[in-house]
Every structure is written in C-alpha cells, then in structure tokens.
Length: 86
Image 1 (cartoon, rainbow, N blue to C red):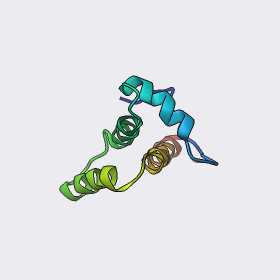
Image 2 (cartoon, rainbow, N blue to C red):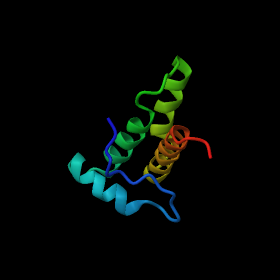
Image 3 (cartoon, helix red, strand yellow):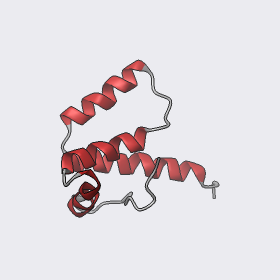
Image 4 (cartoon, rainbow, N blue to C red):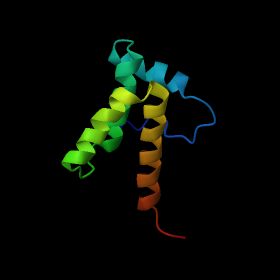
C-alpha cells in the first residue's frame, strides 16, 4: 500500500530528512525505513524470479538514499504512465 505522504521527488539532494521522518514509523531505524520505501515502490509490480533476486540484491547493495531515490523514480514513472498523453 502506498503512503500518500511519501515524497516522490524529484530530488536535488539526498533525501535524508524524508528518510529520518519515515524512520519514526520503524522505531527510528532509517535502514528499515528505506527498505520499506523500496519494497513499497515495487509492490504490485509483476515480478519474475530474477526480478525478485534483483530487488533483494538492491536492499543489500545500495545505501538508504539510493534505495529511496530509486523508489521515487519508480513511483514517478508509474504516475506519469497513468496521466493522459498530452
């Protein structure tokens, strides 16, 4: 389920404030907040076995800010796909 209050970007700098704010929902754990944000972004997408491996790999390979920004990119891509073409 998407949190409507989640900032989706675009980002001009690292989203540290957003991560800290979201961490309040995860007992102050910023790593858990970033991972939840990433999983939220890919939730509902059709994923194959390799996709799932990459999603899991990203959690281990990327830092919190990178996961957060990638999640924002996915959300913005979804949103732009739902708007009528102009």
